[in-house]
Length: 294
Ligand code: C2E
Ligand code: MG
Ligand code: MG
Ligand code: MG
Image (cartoon, rainbow, N blue to C red; front, side):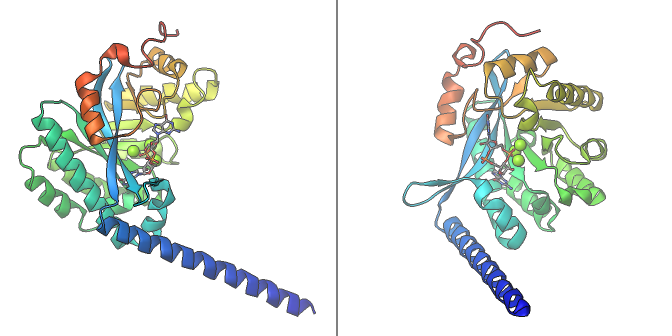
């Protein structure tokens, strides 16, 4: 009887796994189709310098808009694609880079001076075809100043291949492209990454910004990141800035570059163009919120 029950549980377990596998297969097929039929677009979120209010950069964020108009966020599919279909991830990565570079060139020609940041997963970066693809893409956009493209690499296990990552990043930088470490402070080797990799910018993960200014631990982490970044000569963006209080606390700590719903949500390119044309510092929700905290 005991064995029979075990057998039944095992059977149930197998069915659950089979179900999960089928669901994943369905998702991966849907993603491949969506990419082919133009359901993917990029939205862009401003990165703002305070107190000047100038938008110094925008981050490209992938959006899947389905025919019925509903939106799927990257967290709902990118991790799955990356783990289970690296080829498809490469195709998505190419689409993203291609669109972002084209848009960066459009803004450059329109006279806006801003960087476009593109997320690249560590696995994409370490893929053999990455560098030649990037070089070829930039070759097709000769007018775009290379330093206007910044690649954001998240701290993940893949980055453990430090020597490999470093050589690819150096080669990309040889093309003129710059790098940011994304979600900085969440990886277990943040400081090693900063020391070993050719980085121009770090982005403080929003989990450390959330508790400002009250949470002493978060405050200490932010302070430490700012100090270390200064020593290494890299600039710092705070992610996930949602409230005036957080913005003022960051300013008081000496952090000027900020990104978050409190400043602007990710928007379609056309709306970003309007934003760049119209945005006056006083129009920013966070700057009319009183004097900086000390
Ligand atoms: P990330 O690169 O750290 O991007 C920031 C994420 O935080 C975005 O989520 C953005 O919409 C969200 N965010 C911005 N401001 C706030 C805020 O004030 N509060 C909160 N709670 N969230 C805020 P999103 O667009 O869902 O992207 C999630 C992650 O997916 C990104 O994190 C990035 O790692 C990845 N991702 C997005 N687009 C791409 C892409 O084109 N390629 C690759 N490889 N990964 C991408
Ligand atoms: Mg990012
Ligand atoms: Mg991030
Ligand atoms: Mg992230």
